[in-house]
Length: 213
Image (cartoon, rainbow, N blue to C red; front, side, top):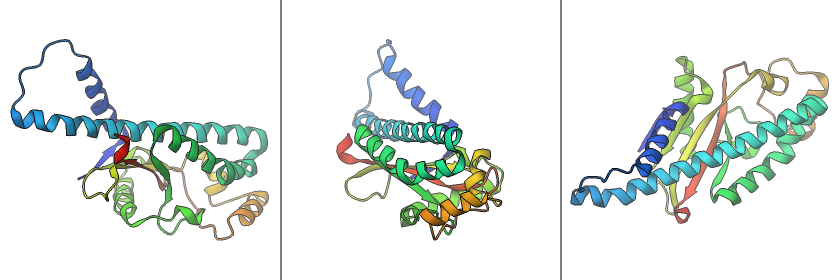
C-alpha cells in the first residue's frame, strides 16, 4: 500500500499514536484479530516515526549548512556544500537512525548523476508532480510505502523537495557567471536549472530496514 499524503497529514497520525501510548485508562479487551494486528501496527508506526525523524535530521542539518555557506561565500560556497558535505551528512544520519536515505531528482532534471530516480521512486514522483500541477505545495507531498517491498525493507518514505527562493541562485533560469563556472566544474552534465519558486525539484527518500525494528 502506498499512501500519498501532505506532510502535515502525517503529524496527527504520529501524535495520536503517542497519545494512545500515554493514556492511563485501561483499554477494553481486544478481540483475537485485533490483538494479532497490534504488533504489526506498532511496528509500522515505529517505522514511520524512524523514517520521519531521519528525514527531518538530514533536511535540518543540510539546510543549516547551506544557509551558513550562503552567508559566508554565496552560491558558489553552497554548491560546494551540496557536492561535498551533503553525502557526509547523509552518511551520519543513516548511521544514527539505522536507515538508508538519499535525494532523487525529477526525471530528466538531474544535477548529480547519482540522484537519478530508481524504478520504485518514479510512481511517487509522478504522483507528486500531478498534485503540484493541481496546486498542492511541493514540499508537503509525502508517500509512505508499506506493501510490495523487497526482502529486508520494512518501509519506504518519500517527501517532495520544493524550489524555494534561495534555490534559484543555483537552480533558476538566470545564473551568475561564477555559479555557472562552479556548476560546470563539479556537474558537467547538469540538468537541474530553469526551475521557478514552488516547482517540484525531486524528493528525499528514506528506507527503513526490517532489522531496524
